[in-house]
Amino acid sequence: MNSHSVVKYCLVIILVVLGLTLVSACNKQGPKQIGPKESVTLGVSSIVMSTPIFVAQAKGYFEEEGVQVTLKPYPTGKKALDGMFAGENDVATAAETPIMFQGFARHDFFVFATFFQSYNDAKIIARKTAGILTPADLKGKRIGTIEKTSAHYFTCMYLMEHRIDPATVTISFYPAPELPEAFKNGKVDAVVAFEPYVYQSRLSLPEQTVTLPKSELFRETFNLVAMMAWTGQHPEAVKKMLRAIDKAITFVQNNKQESIEILVKNAKFNSEMLETVWDDYTYQLSLDNSILTSLEDEARWAIRNKLVDARTVPNYLDYFYLNALKTVKPESVSIIK
Image 1 (cartoon, helix red, strand yellow):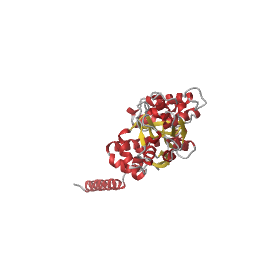
Image 2 (image 1 turned 90 degrees about the vertical axis):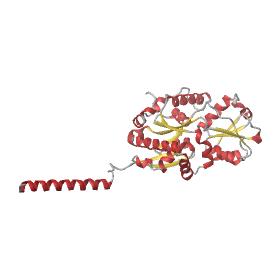
Image 3 (image 1 turned 180 degrees about the vertical axis):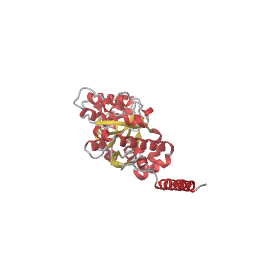
Image 4 (image 1 turned 60 degrees about the vertical axis):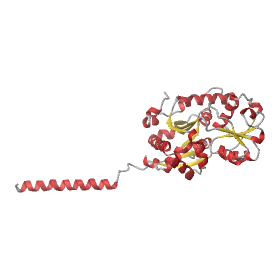
């Protein structure tokens, strides 16, 4: 081998060694972060329906997907939604009823995913000492619930299902956290609410409480909502949140006990209550036509009961943002725009 060939051979060896050294150094540094994480304030209802949100935060799934999420708690979805419109949060969790009411008042927000559904979340509990043992016994009684929420709508549907004239019932509205005390002190004979407020009300009078039969007529959903302008400015953050929540849903489906432990620690829920209601809840990402039907049915109820000034049902199809979920989980979107 002549001197020129030796030099060339040595140069090749040196380049290979340098290349391997650089690769090793890059591997030690880990994956390169492209730009800062987007920050999102998520208005989360402190109720069991929000389980995937609490789990996604506790397990670090938002961070894994590259979005910095700060949870801002509210007692109900209605309050979380009001907070979003007031600029307190970027994204809110809310049931379909508050969304329905806002559809009459404004046109600047989107629903971009449903992540919860149940036919047995809203419940009616009553005082035996008030003479209530069956749905028919609600006639002439005082019912406490939460105004313009899914519990309010469910109250009216339950009375209709059991052929009770609403005029024979006194319905009073309370902030959700005040319902257990109103029930305990005898201000109302029955409570219509969702968890954990049903459990808290029942616990206030454990020996005197009856749970009335559930209804199959009402499917409650819980949804993610954001302002149209914010969604347009942060399309990638929306997708990252959905991926994180989808991971959390998978975790919840496969890890009941650890999920319950997370909720007890981070949301201060009662473990006995969670065990009782766990199998009634379905968590999955979707945007399907049934939520459109629910919104329209509830809008007709609001018009019929003069809860809004309008006389026509809004076009709720315009209130859905499909692009993000179509990208993250296309098979879960059946709404066609």
